[in-house]
Image 1 (cartoon, one colour):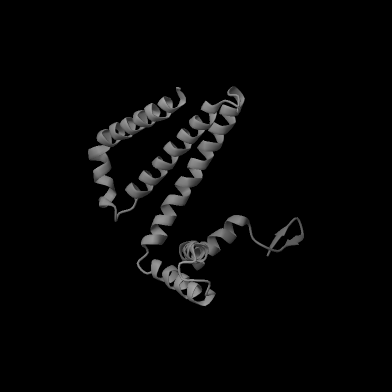
Image 2: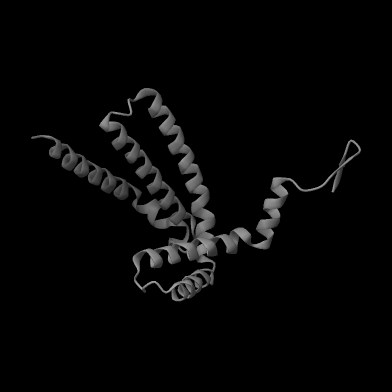
Amino acid sequence: MSVIDGLVVWGNSIGNILNQWADMGIFAYALPFLLVFALVYGILWKSKLLGENKGVIVVLALTVGLLSLQFDYVTTFFATIFPYAGIGMSVLLVALILMGLFVDPANKGYNIAFFSVGGLIALIVIISSFVKNEWWGSGGWWWSEYWPALIALLVIIGLVLLVIFASKKQP
């Protein structure tokens, strides 16, 4: 409770509430558990791999969800990848807006260009998240040593895909 110009104001700011949730472990444990649980449950239910017995599927999803939090690998990785993903989606949104200004959406190249930008951003987000985690080569030594080879490999793959897609369009 706080007093502003003689008025009593109840509540907290959004920042205080989010900090309290962080202190309670909502972001470190509850949300990662829910995400893993929902993904495992959804995959098992949709695939019908174990039949339609919801009890078995729930028990397995609960087990996988709880076991995934055991050594903090999942929570550390989620704490790394989702902020990077938010930045990547912001960059993708800006690219979408700028491409919408200058390119006709009916153009087939528009979709390929947007998909390429999105794929590049996704690749950067994933690599940055792996490099940031200590369990992935203690700070990313492999990336600092092999980045030119990885970039060259990506360029070669991109050129091969370009040749494949370009050759299909010709009669």
